Amino acid sequence: MSMTNDYGLWQEFKRAWPVDKIKSMTLPEYTNCGRKDTFTYWIEAKLEKLGSIWGGSSFKFGIYSRDDKGERENVGGRFYSDSYGWMRKYGESEKEAFENVKLQILETIDAVQRNELERIDQVDLGDSYKWKIAFHYQNSLDKPSCINIFRRRVLEAASKSAPGTPISTMQKKIVSEWDGRDFLPYARKLWETYSKDIPSTPEQMLEAEVYTEKEEPREPVISTNEHTEIQYLLLRLGVDMGFDIWAARNDKNKQHDGVIFSDIPRIKQELPLQFDSQTNKTIEHIDVLWLRGNSIMAAFEIESTTSIYSGLLRMSDLIAMQPNINIPLYLVAPDSRRDKVVAEINRPTFSKMSPPLSEMCRFISFSKIKEELPKIKTIIKYVKPEYLAEISESCELNDM
Image (tube, rainbow, N blue to C red; front, side, top):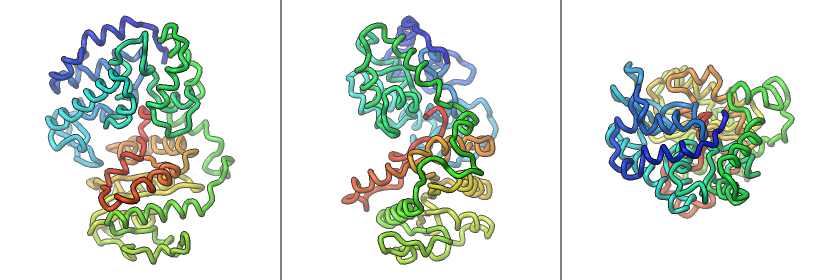
């Protein structure tokens, strides 16, 4: 992407879409196939030269106007009407979903104009999308609050931050190091410097890996004990949240801190007979399941030294055999394997699924689990499964 220094384009957008217009914006004004004056078309296409968010699915907008009018199943947290597709978390109808998405946009705008960037971290929109909105609604480019780089990996490199650092923290650091001269050339130079070595497609990511599936990893090896520890923590978390649990059939005799998995309260020795035998054979090898009655509430594959591909195959097989299944799926791995996870999940094998596996499966790092669980220890019985969405990351390329 070639980034422009066009301050006029930044101003043109604000004239076309002032905040008052956002407040009264209708759904067709927000998204409408074939129209080039909608809010989403402006953000993604017309403002591309001020920072790209191309890629990924249209669900990044929360709700979008459908070009394909064929019948679609409501699966993986996605809802469809004849005219729109939207994320179920925003509402049961297209009208409700749009109003909730609009509230998230207005929260982003208010936060950036008050220079309260930490609030944007909490906004329930995709990272690239909400931070592009924030960039274009900040008060001034003479005294900027945030920069027009929207890919997490580039922000991490430019700010020299660890993976998982809040984007608001990285934005503040980058802006604080600005020399006070023209801001857009400063942003462009950072982009050109730090984006060139970061792979952006699944193929580039896989080529950039220091090992192949057939070779031993050359990165620091994570011990089997850490895999077992994470598996134990997820099993215990499920129990503490009130679920029955399942450990992969061949892991029942594992132990952590002297506790054998098969002795953990509420662990199931047999899966509920909800699915056919072939589906159950796939499910019984998934590392951790949270169960309520016959329903799977969440599924986790933990990948430390093994091939990520095998875990994703189990996830995709489950979806293929039960296309109407609607459960959260999580790939849990060390921070150092995040790029590998994203690359694998965006392989054509998985990206051509309907919906793509990257839309249904999210990434949680080992460090995030160890960091977050102590924080909820005293309130854990009140925590809902949706909590996982807060500590996990999207696997869609545009949200990296």
